Length: 118
Image (tube, rainbow, N blue to C red; front, side, top):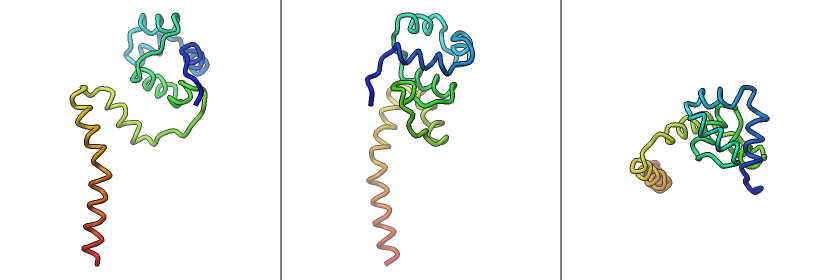
């Protein structure tokens, strides 16, 4: 993956944004002054802001960050990611633990199903 730099990030936002930065920030519920300052000073926004911008512009975060077009996530995964941006740190930690345990649980279920089928 290419190095990530804020200047290129904002250039890609500009290339894909048909409206003004102000309209984009309003659409996303972001503080325009903050976005404008980040843009002017070539500062990277937060991960959730990057995600929101990518979704609004219908492009991938990979493209915004690196200029490389990679596979777009299924809409279901994207919807979950949007919800995760609004979750508290405490609940996010709980969710991360659940996700880490999921492959183990699926393995147990598969083994149990195999035993029942035999």
